[in-house]
Length: 241
Image (tube, rainbow, N blue to C red):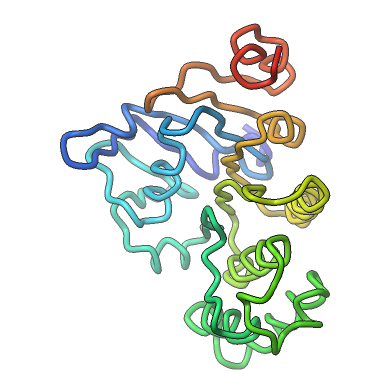
């Protein structure tokens, strides 16, 4: 198996419960190194619960998660970040009263040696110039698209091998959505493997190498985006066909 095909992230029979409610019911999926894989499905399908479990915010009831050949299910979030996986959460979750610079320092100081932190932040400013221009501004004063760039920069400070993206286009105008997806493509070209949860199914399928369709906590369809875009069930449910 080539490096491009090797699963960098693998989920096997994952079950996630909240009390007596099973949000994820036996999901298995694979994210090959160097690929973009997308999870699509209606609200409540379990997509965010999967990402939350992968990054250690939620403990699985059953199943396993493998990152680069290591079982990481149940690890605390900081250990998972150190192992090479970072999350850009739904809603961006920037610290609005802190400046852009303070947000990045806080994110980076736990993940970077002190001597490497400043160069690492400057690399993010080079990648996202609008953040450098507004480094002394409160993060809450940024536009939605700028806050999404800050959320990307914050996650990338950890130099992840796998980047988890939860609804990156949520609440943004069409122009900003286009910019966000251009950014995702650039991050991918730079060598980061991506697992994407996205409400804009057409855009998600246009950028992905592989796709899983979830309903009621289970995978109901899996395949290349080209095949799913002509599937009558996907067209009827998600593409307006």
